[in-house]
Image (cartoon, rainbow, N blue to C red; front, top):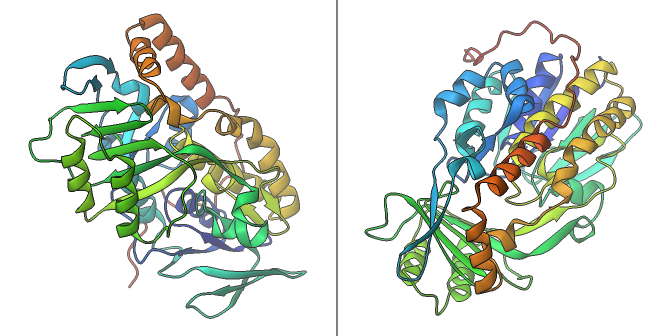
Length: 396
């Protein structure tokens, strides 16, 4: 292969999954991550259907993913007095395998850390393409040149901004925000419950986080790295709410782990520009859409495989990656989880709840999600270069 030095921005799931395959194809891989360390915790993610399982098996991690799974949990919709209204079954949100995002990230890190270079606490500041590579500058590290650069850094991709243009050209705000907090109010129920008011939702012990919020809003201006400011925004969004919302907001305000972001969708015509390519949410993200992790894992397999099949020719490999994957990723161009999780009226809340009392409708929806998850014919790409599966031996 040619073009074997690769810089990947983002060390969550898409980036390390791609690093796993590229290293096995003989590439020298560097992963840069803005966070100071691997991020633990976070929302639950899921895998479903034959395609996801096949890729996890080919990576040699399916059994370990199954071992670490959290299991889907039924969620009871309740009213302001805490009375049950309907039950959303765990398989609706948890897929075939539900597992913590941080657990998947840790598992992929274990498989790549000894053979790939991880640089935490740094970020790309510029990308300059030349005839033979991409000259990259960083916030902290010295400039370096790589054959290829991959943006696997989420919906708010820094690589996409630098290589393609401003975020507002490619990311569509869908009218809602969500927040996750690793905190629960005193005496919180042991089971997963969800409470709704028009345009607002609070879930406790849910399979997204210990406290999970979704609310309708105009687009907000705030510092994405200022959690105190975000906590104040959340508190304002839930002023006057009933049930136990005030005490849950108070608990979330003191949570050591807290995250708030918009529900948005990436809309981009091409995944690659020159020697730079996008992967995962950076290319086809749809917040809380239910397919992000599966798309990242399968996308990494396809991107690495097409590069290997093209002998490292990025023009051919990137084009074939997009041709193979765009149809599979089209599910991310549809849907908006916001109105489902936080319906805009009391009538819409009742309609949503009634849906889970109709078994035929529910089965049909589950069948459709499984169909979308398997809507790709996986190729058998060139055999990787003889690396054993499993964690690499420690250095030294």
